[in-house]
Image 1 (spheres, helix red, strand yellow):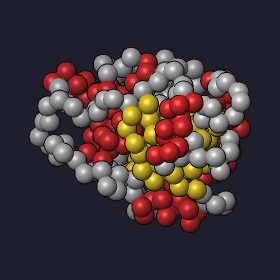
Image 2: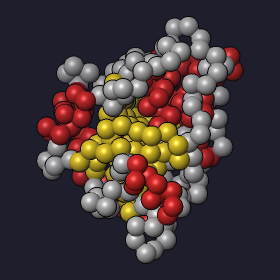
Image 3: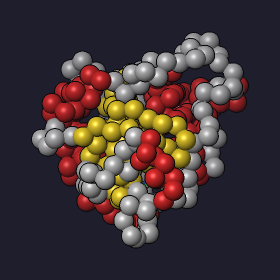
Image 4: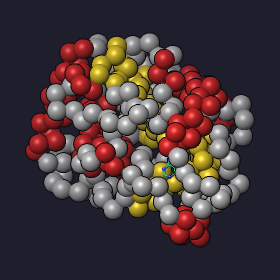
Length: 270
Ligand code: HPA
């Protein structure tokens, strides 16, 4: 992390801490079209715009605020690399949440299905990821007090959290490998074919930077993808962002239920 990002982190932390007295240990980052969960969480709302130096999301479907509750913090509106933000800014929220005391991070996203057995509307646990974004958010100086220079990524998606999610889920949950490209163009059919041959199940444009940062900081991560479409070239039809948002909204109630069930179980030990 460079000096500029460290300054942004400390001023954002000061501003956020001044606005809320609770110190939740769990945070949820909501993906595109999955914002419905935020409505059910009671807490102090803080817009990203009120945090000095904090990046702002520019995508439709991303509100750009934190809701800081008693046990859970929600980030509604994530910062994407494809919007032009630096990799450091993309993970600033993770550093901020960690600095507030969050140690368990639930990351969610809308994803395309590379695995042909999935269908739109499926909720899939992320078992592992492949970083095809071409950047790593930890590149640069490694100031002391955060994490190791070469963080291990072997169990970045905590097996015990996946087991917990499977045990509380009212429907069977598949587990898959998520690959991220930088976007904003969707993948080509050739890229999706490559992913398929490599054993990748899901594709998207987010999550990987945040999980790298969370692993570095020693946080436990649960990743959940909502399949919004079959990836490019699998069906004989073009991809459409409006469709992605619509499918995410449709899965909303099931997704909220799963998240709530997981969080209820996490809270006592949080
Ligand atoms: N590709 C990349 N990102 C996505 C997709 C996809 O097919 N669906 C939702 N986000």
